[in-house]
Image 1 (cartoon, rainbow, N blue to C red):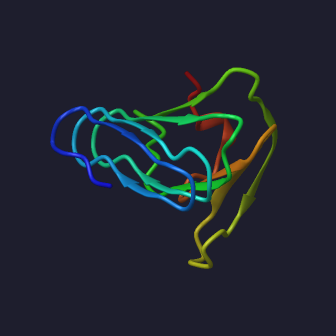
Image 2 (image 1 turned 120 degrees about the vertical axis):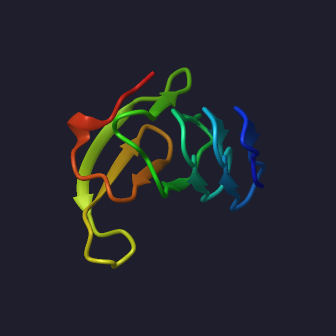
Length: 114
């Protein structure tokens, strides 16, 4: 699913979704399944809920983007991994339900939560 040059709201469904917000300040939620999320340019918000799977964000910008955790969801762990084998450090965040990998992000302290 692809967004436009405006501020888009993209919501995935069950299964593995691929969401790309394009330009603008977008809101993306993969819902259930193992999803690949790309915010594109702009200050994007990535929403996670209890029904989430193992998601990845391809372009999390620590200066603009934020993670929004749904009610009852919390961070349980975090570690640095090479999730896709490209030799670049990625941040893996374990949630109370599911997980998210921020590709190319190497510091948990740099992540903004809304």
